[in-house]
Image 1 (spheres, rainbow, N blue to C red):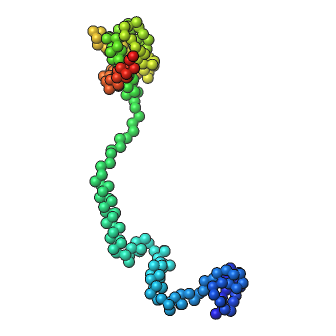
Image 2 (cartoon, rainbow, N blue to C red):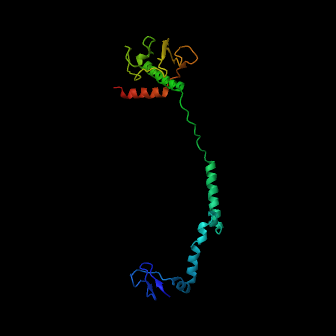
Image 3 (cartoon, rainbow, N blue to C red):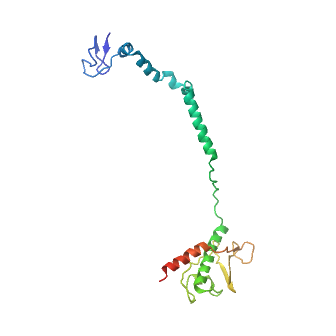
Length: 211
């Protein structure tokens, strides 16, 4: 039997040991399996059972479980448990995003102003008069107890119209004239109630900062 070194490509009539006489590199003898078969046939059979056949690499995935029914049952049972658990869990409903309209944004601005009026009333024991208008929330109108400013700036609504305000008998009327810019029409946006939670937080902060 002739041997060819895969490293140096030299051919030898005989091979002593596992080292190439030409390059000195370690070689694997081709008669290893026959010798192993004679020495320990059960070990060779066990190793061959673990090795995948060449055709198995090109077979569909379910062929892998064809000879392993117990393993397949465990996999299917695990999948059923996972799917059953996911079906019992209540997922939160995702509300679709809706762009806020001009009316909704105007109402939020009115809530801020309405809360500032309540803050003014807590300090001054009254609402700003109609003559003082909403400017009293930004600048001191000379009212006793004024601790403003209550809003940083008095801006018009989203249609560039000023917010309408009036006060009578300790009641206020606050609204936006809407898109048409006329008071008393159908598109007027009346102020919602104030944000009492934000007001209470602000009053609590005032008590902490009080000397």
